[in-house]
Length: 88
Image (tube, rainbow, N blue to C red):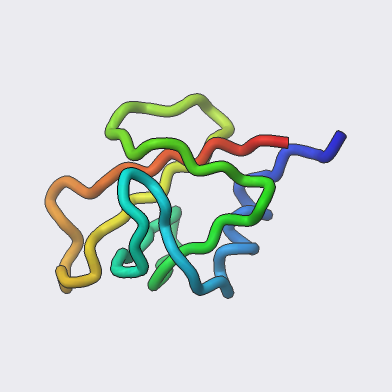
């Protein structure tokens, strides 16, 4: 069984990636914010499954990315909270 990806390895994978966020919509026109890392767009590794966009808290161990439309030069007052569910 593959090890569950860690937040650090996930962010390391994303840092040099360019693709898209998938949620209720699929778009490349989003800024992603994960901890202190900023992304023009995000590609999810195959072992990571993106679930629905929600503003609710997610279980410890999962990763939350705040996504803002790239048309806004400043982050939105209430950004989308995109829970990333790490799966084996």
